Amino acid sequence: MQHSKINGYDIHPKTRVLINVWAIGRNPDYWEKPDEFYPERFIDSSTDFRGQNFEFLPFGGGRRGCPGINMGIALVELAFSNLLYHFDWELPKGMKKEDINMDESSGLTVHMKSALHLVPINYNWQSEEKTG
Ligand code: HEM
Image (cartoon, rainbow, N blue to C red):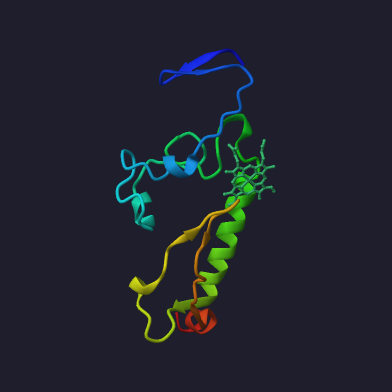
């Protein structure tokens, strides 16, 4: 790699550069309410997660981007679609959605600080199929 200058900083060959993707993903210049869990932000948005939009890099990007991206997406979709297809999900009695603690704990991957408790209600899709 050749010597480069980025935002006035000299990057010498063989420098190890660590990118703070977490901070980029919460930059208020690019994200409305960056600290809120607000997945609706992606409805009708052109921001893609495959590494071309640098404000959103869940799989990294470039030559060292995640090679398992397609498998990762398929696994997440398969798990979620099965859980949503077979069950309705409710909060434990007396709990409101505002009570869910969305704080994160950091580590190699991000986890919720306190476990999410949900009550699965069996969803009988077969009986619905019969009645139309
Ligand atoms: C939702 C699931 C997944 C997410 C969010 C994810 C995310 C990531 C991220 C952020 C990186 C670092 C990319 C970078 O440095 O630019 C990475 C690297 C990597 N991922 Fe994934 N990944 C997922 C699933 C998988 C799966 C299923 C596999 C393999 C079957 C996999 C294999 C790898 C490997 C081998 C690397 C290292 C690539 C390298 O350093 O050249 N990932 N992943």
